[in-house]
Image 1: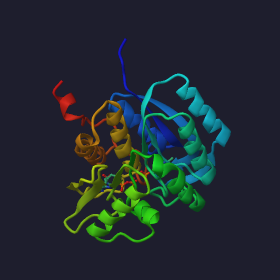
Image 2 (image 1 turned 60 degrees about the vertical axis):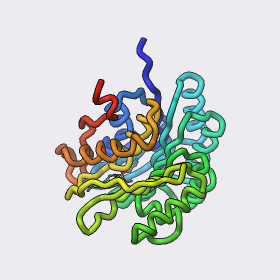
Image 3 (image 1 turned 90 degrees about the vertical axis):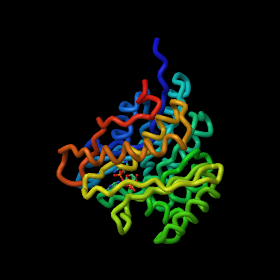
Length: 274
Ligand SMILES: Nc1ncnc2c1ncn2[C@@H]1O[C@H](COP(=O)(O)OP(=O)(O)O)[C@@H](O)[C@H]1O
Ligand SMILES: Cc1ncc(COP(=O)(O)O)c(N)n1
């Protein structure tokens, strides 16, 4: 029998397959971990935008938690689009009852096409109930602005925001820079680690609108490799590289914000040598 690290995504589906649970599963599979799901919502969505969304009843979400906890041995979990306050509350309740390892929160608020995937009241619930449980939180720039309540223009704004979000209770804070290329066209993400150290992770910018699911892909790569036992600092450069390559090696699917290439080969360095 082969032992394989088990992970779970607690999020919503994307009918067109490029973001949400669908992107998470593809990334998990790419990274060689066994993936389970707790479906919180379903979306009718394509690369043009989100046409409709439908939440799963809170008591059913709790049943999903119980089914998983009664049987699987989950090492790390990530959340994605949680839609509304009731769903955020159900996930926090499920987590308190059935802890599923390291918790990575991707606080998805708005899809690339502009649709809201988290209601305003849910943001307070996210702050109060979920962030204190997080091993890592991965807001993009607009999400980090909402969490701290001010705009983030400069690098020092971003550094201060990460400190503020860490004080809300997340051990590690990654602020993704995909919504702002620097003047020399670089995309820089900033991470503040639990020991107080920090780093900027930078790649060249790719001129494309085919960035559906970039955040999901990055946070799933991290989740998969945490479950394998790697530490966060050794995962981050590879996570950034994987996302970069998945954007760069474009696949021809859809006519709007197209999905990423989840077949690219970027693994942790020790795996490269095996
Ligand atoms: N056009 C791009 N070129 C290079 N990297 C990008 C590009 N767009 C996003 N990224 C990277 O993709 C990752 C996800 O970031 P982002 O797009 O901000 O997340 P989200 O999907 O949550 O909005 C980050 O590492 C970011 O730097
Ligand atoms: C169900 C679902 N979850 C998450 C996203 C975020 O996608 P993106 O990474 O493109 O912002 C999405 N569009 N749909």
